[in-house]
Image (cartoon, rainbow, N blue to C red; front, side):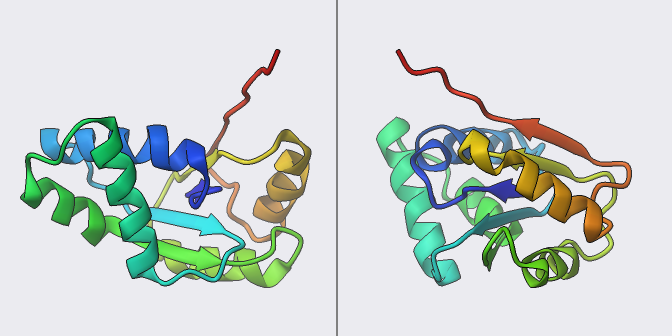
Length: 134
């Protein structure tokens, strides 16, 4: 899962990395994006494509289609248990998920508690993206 999927970090860094994985043929897991904006999946795909284009170029349309086929989106409030219920449903039978927190550090505890309460922390990894600003 990618929390903060509609943000700049996802657009500039994460989507280009996922595209590179798709090009190498190693993207085999669902990519569940999570954020508050009520975007359509098409809006999220456009956001991803813009980020990939700005980081270089799109030279493998099949890889881009593969990335998009793995991508889904859940819109919701990180304080709402219903958001985590929807995430659990989106994960389906996926095992050992990685939860990437590309969100402000002030939200880390809220999201981690929500993951635990929804049973999404079992055999999972939580990756926090922390940036230091001068």
